[in-house]
Length: 239
Image 1 (tube, rainbow, N blue to C red):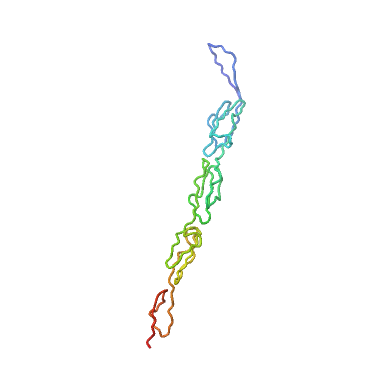
Image 2: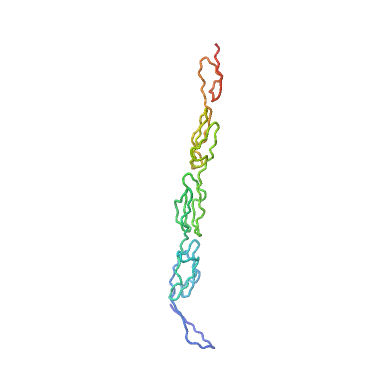
């Protein structure tokens, strides 16, 4: 490089000699694209710059505890501090979701995402995707809610029994039986599925039917089948 001196005469005071300091420039810091620089960028002696990271990025070295750093080009072409590097903010492992798990993702640093999935029998509440934010936290984590079927009702002339679970939660098993004199119409066992529906409709109980007795020389009071607890009269034919 070159150094230029300019001397100005003084009509009052007489002085002798001069003093100058010359130094080579500092090397180019080669900041990455995630870095913001304020100040002259010629890297000359005594130049001072302020360095910070863009949103979502921070200094990689633990020694830098502030969000910005001042660098001065010192005598001999040496920077006054270690050259910082900006790296994406780290969010840590994704949060644990009860009855679910994360199964796919691009990473755990700024602007990267992770996807969740619920175990069978559970439905997702919220977005399946969480994103690492600039504040090194994840966006709202979804929840996995167990499937809920319509409450299994009682049936007339029958009994409802819980085999497993309860009256509405996923994987619950309900068994229906009819009282004596009644027969079941429909499936006796219902299973609460992951789609919030039972495996079949609720059954019903209907009265058993009795066939008409075959009695010779008799007259019956009815000509159709009799239901449970119905009555009829039998009389003998004339003669």
